[in-house]
Image 1 (cartoon, rainbow, N blue to C red):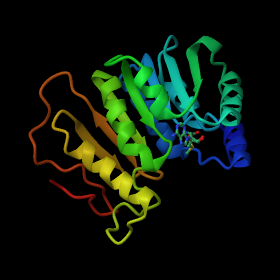
Image 2: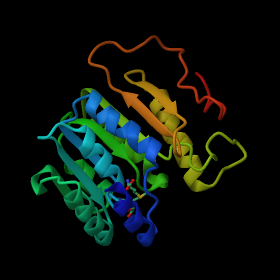
Image 3: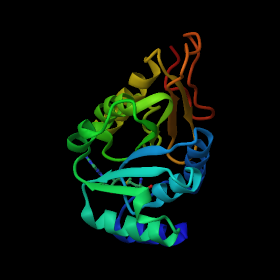
Length: 212
Ligand SMILES: C[S@@+](CC[C@H](N)C(=O)[O-])C[C@H]1O[C@@H](n2cnc3c(N)ncnc32)[C@H](O)[C@@H]1O
């Protein structure tokens, strides 16, 4: 099923989440029993399909994209996997216009997979939306392998690097940077006191983003 969504993503020139990163995303949704999920960057619905697969049957995926054509493709993908229409809330708009309208601390999982340059601002909004016990996920966190290379200073790479630092330096969070696909930055907002400071969210094999 996801193959057809991937084919539509390719036709639209939309970079869909990789199978490995998608599998981890589904696992996270299942592990936190994600009833309420926000996704920034619907694309053609590939990541949405993985999320829906992991979420409980009554879970609702709120997904945001500024391209109506991408969202049309995503709706097809959701229908193909048998997701009832009331399980998805597909919102067309710019993330920074839509996210502030969503409720504080009301979501179990937030996936950011849209404009890298805006990623840090999306992280701010995403953290506001998370309930304690929830998980923030940033796809493409290694930005085509450029984030770990200090010589790369283009706007997208710099912004993704800053977003990763923002997450790393937040003492409320328990983060990890998983080198799957284009890099999945995962950060849990614990219900209780987080781990002691000083532990890295290291990347194996790809160099550290930088331990604190
Ligand atoms: C990499 S694709 C998302 C892929 C999707 N998550 C998947 O795996 O199938 C990025 C998407 O973000 C959307 N996008 C880019 N900037 C955005 C913004 N500022 N607000 C909302 N959506 C945005 C693009 O239209 C595109 O569909």
